Every structure is written in structure tokens, then in C-alpha cells.
Image 1 (cartoon, rainbow, N blue to C red):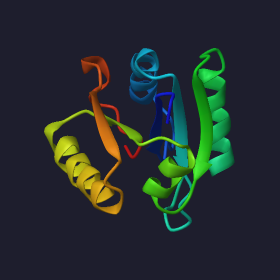
Image 2 (image 1 turned 135 degrees about the vertical axis):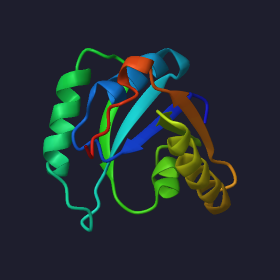
Image 3 (image 1 turned 90 degrees about the vertical axis):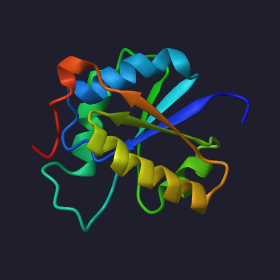
Image 4 (image 1 turned 180 degrees about the vertical axis):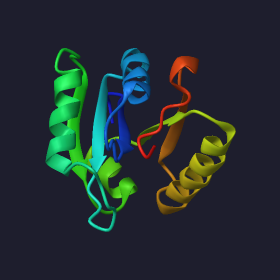
Length: 132
């Protein structure tokens, strides 16, 4: 793991300015940011994985160290496949932190080498939510 690669996972259904804010602000922190679109057949989504990936690619096409990919299964397995141990998560509210903290602890149990980096969304995007 010589380069610093961060995996930014999510459904991104659809991607919004809050997600883009996190991506843009984290780019200087890492050699590469992989936006990993979750493929979950049990989740009822507005857009297909391919449509979500295409939207994201359009938004990040000029960002040199950002890649777009998809995954299914366990996030820790995908992170290992990417040859990194860093998961990037955006936080808008205290309730987001509580939820993400539990996920981070679970990922740590599954793979003790995994680290989760939490980044606060800029205040102007704190109300955004893909589900809404």
C-alpha cells in the first residue's frame, strides 16, 4: 500500500453537491479517490448502477485523481481489492456520525486494518440527502 487510495462508497442515487463537495475537498488528501457505487439488488433505486456511474463520471471527468467503480458484497472486501485500507465517509449531522461510527466499528471487526476517515460536509450542503 505505497500510495494513499481512499474508497468513497455509497449508493449515489443520485450524486449531489454534498457528495461532490466531499470528493473535491478530499482529493488533495489522497493520491487517488475511488468513488465506489454500491450495487445492491435488494435496494429500490431511482437509477441503475450504470446510470449512476455515468452521472458521476460526467461530474468528475476533469478531476485527475478520481476514479469511478462499482461493487457488491462486503465493503471491506472491495477495499482490500483496491489495495488500500481507507474508507472515506461524509458526515452531515450528529445522527450521521452515530450511524457511520457503528459502520466503521463493524468494518474494523471484519478487517482490523481498515480505517474510516470522516469528513464534515460544508454547511451549505448539510441539508442534502439522496433519499429525499
